[in-house]
Length: 222
Length: 220
Image (cartoon, rainbow over all chains, first blue to last red; front, side, top):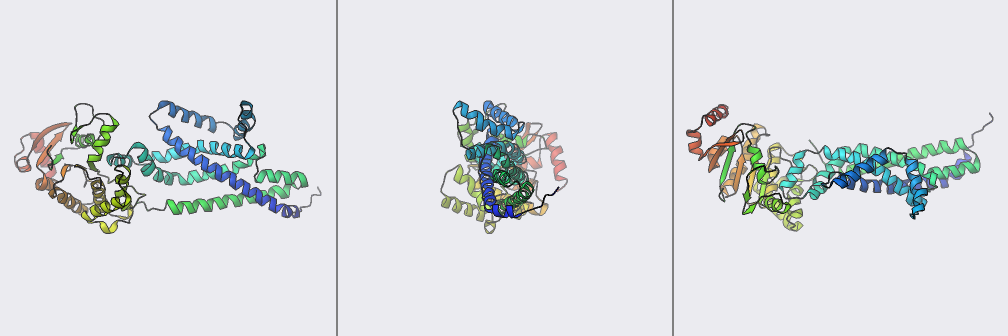
């Protein structure tokens, strides 16, 4: 049992690890953006008049939420090239994170939309606005405000899930850590440090989310 | 209904007053019969509904201001998005009507920062910004504290005196006496009685009307 801790390895690898953090943040932010687009579009489509569109959204949410992320990303990375759709690891990671996060976002945002009082929608219609305008200008912002904590919580999850993208060798913190660990065999030191780096990333994102909330959702309510 | 006419709809709850005026701008589907607004027959086509909604302003019992927009933004949204007029013009119109309901100095506030009476006056201004041909009021004072009822009624009286065509569902019989050209009494989805306010209040023809008026005026 003569394992002596030696954090100098981590110290030397710190620039690489910090770049790994940048990679993780990049994947996460791109994934969140895609998830947000899928989420909002999905909610709009989920309540569309076209039954086939609603069916697609329901099916999409069911499939994505009830299958493992690792399988989803392997499917994108290894299976799709066989039918001619070849993506690099970064693109694969962003799409996988965005699609996965988007399915959860649809359910969360939908909850927010349903929490909006019917009178708000009626007031919009009575003023001569169309269904799409009512959603975009009247419903969306208060709906997002209502579910902001759950949505941002989900986005923190998405960020941490990005570590699984190391499985397709996307450039992010966990894959950098794996490389350093296999070079140095300093498993304890490397993953101990990486744990704190993920914690720091999460906190940084939470600060960002709080700033966004302050900027956009701080209007007074009764 | 004539241009410039003011109709007050009253009756016990569940009698179909709200449903009737909500049919006029098609917030409620029409099961039987037809409604013609300003020469446009209201059918199920989106186009007809659009045309009618642009001509019909509505004020709700629960104000329904948009909480995430300032008072001014509330008043500018529909003119810009539905009428497609420019921002400058929309703002000028909004400020004009906010002044008219005597709330111009609150333009930059959010709805939650205003009292109920102020919110309802903003809702009236917001509807007026679309320059409707007719205004519908669905129990506009029912959700207000008593001391705020008067400021909203005064605004409505001012609007009536300016010649606006109005249909008001309300239990404010003083208002009905003062501005209505016609009072219509409804019960169980039917129009029971209608007439000029003086005759309607002094000498109601139907027992059901007398009973209702007895109940409602007992508290005044």
